[in-house]
Length: 392
Image (tube, rainbow, N blue to C red; front, side):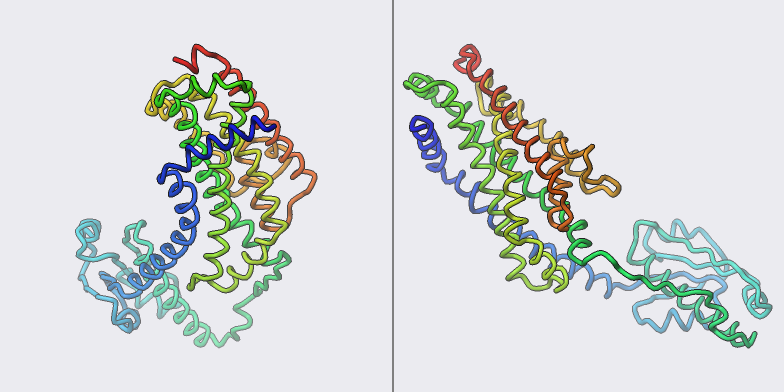
C-alpha cells in the first residue's frame, strides 16, 4: 500500500507542477457553471428584450379596417397594404416584409353572413418571434369576431364553452424540475470528467515516454500493477475533482447569481441536498476510474502526445451519444437501461434530482459501474504489461 501511495504522490507532484493542469483541473471547472449560468441568463434577457423591441414588417391584402386598427395599435408593427396577392416569398426573403396576411376578397360579405373564411399567412417558419406575434394578433382578432357573433346571435357565453380544463398537478415541483433539468447536469459533469482524465492519462503514460522517464518508473522495485493503479487513480482524480468543483460551482451559482426564477432556485436548492450530492458522487467515482483505465489502455502504445490524442479522442462520441439519449423524451431509467454506461448515469441523476430514484436500481447501477471500472483497469494492465508497447 505504501508503494501505491508513493506512485500516487509522484504522479500528482509531476502533474501539479504544470500551471495548465491547475487551471484546467481546478480553476476552470469551478468557474465554468457559474459563468455559463450568468452568461446564459444575461444573453437570454438581451435576446428577449431585443425581440420585444424589434419592428415587425407586415404586408396586408384585403384586410378589414378593424384588423388594420388592431395591427397599428402596436407601434412596433409596420404595415404595407397591397391591392393583390403578389410574390410575397421574394419580399420576405429580401426583407421588404417579414410576414404577409391575405384575406379573402369576399371577407366582409362572409363575416356579415356569419360564415367562415380564410386568411393566408405567408411566413418564414424559422422566424419564431415574428410568427409568434402575428399568430397572437390573429388569435386576438378571432376572439373579437367570436364575441361579436355571440352577441349578434344572443347566445350566452357559457353555452359556447362546453368545458374548461382545470389541471391538478399531482407531481411535486421538485420532481418536475428535476426531470427536466437533471439531464443537463451529468452532461456537464461527464464531459468535464472526460477532459480531465484524458489530459492526465496521456501525460502520465505518453508524456513519460516523451520525457524518457517511463523506464526509470518501471525500474523501481514496485510491481507494474501498482504503477498502473497509481497512474489510473491520479488520472481519475484529475477527472473527478473537476466534476466535484462543477457541482460546487452550480451550488454557488444558485446562491449568488440574480435573474434565476425563484421557483427554480428553491427547487434546485432542495434537490442538491447532502443525500443527492453523495449519491451522484458515488456514481462518478467508479466512472472516473473506468475512464482513466480505458484511456490508459488506448494510449499505452502511443509514442507521441498527438498519436495518443488521435487514439483516445474518438471515444468522446460513445460518451456524447448516450448523454444526448438521456435528454430525449420517452427514454426512462429502467432495468433495460440501468446497465448501459453513461446512459445510466444520465438517467439516474435525473431520478436522483427528482427524488424518485429506485434504490435497488441505484445499487445495480453502482455495481455495474464498479464492474466496468475493474474491467477497464484489467484491460489497461494487460496493455501496460506489454513492454513492446509501453517502451517503444
